[in-house]
Image (cartoon, rainbow, N blue to C red):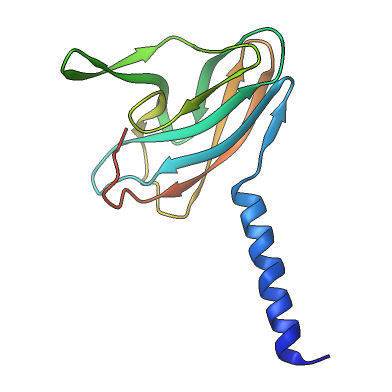
Length: 154
């Protein structure tokens, strides 16, 4: 077999594997979790944000209760929304995932805030966090870190 054909085949296989890993979905009970992403910290900053999509395939709601990250003092569940002409951010005690519905944590909406990050989160790093749900239980997830590159922090 021609060497360049083998090299091209290898590149295609590696690309497919990388796409599969970055778009991986995690199933936990009735929940399906995908699109995890964490923000790399800016120089001198001790907080960062993380995002994901949580889909509930079940007939009863579930709740995200807590999130932990070993290199942060605390991870808070936050909501950003417009109140009149001001963007407001507030901490939530939990986040409901509706039955047969989904919640996307994304910039400008619900998100996870890592507070008191003890060492910088670098672009390309794999951030491991533990999420605790009321019904589905506990799951460890990997959040690939991406630099801010001009995007919103929250």
